[in-house]
Image (cartoon, rainbow, N blue to C red; front, side, top):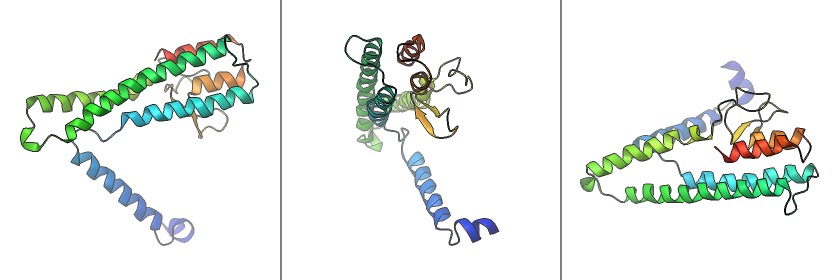
Length: 186
């Protein structure tokens, strides 16, 4: 307590702000029938991760991504899978958003069944992005979308299997193909 007061946050502004934020999160969770999570935001993030993070790694490592190369084909497949997820995400989000307009007196058994179904989908969403054997050299990290960067140990790395392969293998290496295939098959 003394160290925090004297060194980190002597007026406790940060602590107050965090308490307010988590309080608002708690209110949002109990105020909505369906979990307040916008799945389409994950789709947008995945597109940005591929466009900026992975393409930067490809460029930084001098890999050839011209048409017809394995890396180009794998990137095209990943892009298509992200677009498939995007169609699902926008469809699901539209269904969830439509439920917000249903007045309380009109909420029947079908409404309750949909709440249960959509909450189940949202709760299990990130489990769909786990790989059983984990990442190379780090089997305890199983999320194919994000994991701590292997270099720093804490900075987030998006598409970690692909990023790891691009950082530590040759551009035409079969490990890169395996990384893309594992990522797109999830």
